[in-house]
Length: 186
Image 1 (cartoon, rainbow, N blue to C red):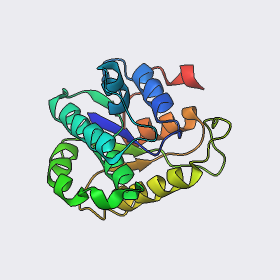
Image 2 (cartoon, rainbow, N blue to C red):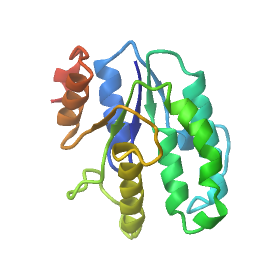
Image 3 (cartoon, one colour):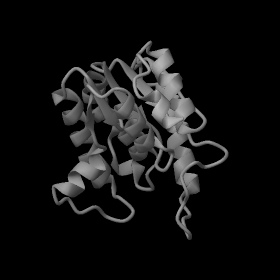
Image 4 (cartoon, helix red, strand yellow):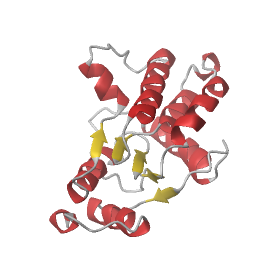
């Protein structure tokens, strides 16, 4: 199976991907585009610009297209569309032009796991962090595009909640996958 883990920043996506990888050791893991690009020497603006998100989207689409059959993706191209849609400079982003490439890429996925922003943050926010509204907007946009399917993506979406063990159990049970190393995460 090809499974992407989706969500706003600091929701526990990477933690869930790590738990899934431990429970599904035969699966390859593709890190999120931001980290892959940083490793390649890409210099991001702070906060990231529309161009930065478009570059990440392009990389995400490429990674999904080129990956093998048993792969876990830390982020989904739809995540980057959501960030573009709510960016302060969103009017300069042509989200519609990206939709055909995003549809083609995510159409190769068997499932997308949505890790929402929860009322009680599970990932500590750095002091002075004031991007809570931005996180919420990305979360709402992802829910609209993935759960409500406003972009006609027709994806199997698994929404998870709770601690990492509960999230992992939900994914494994929903996809009818063997529990593997699940016990190690409880």
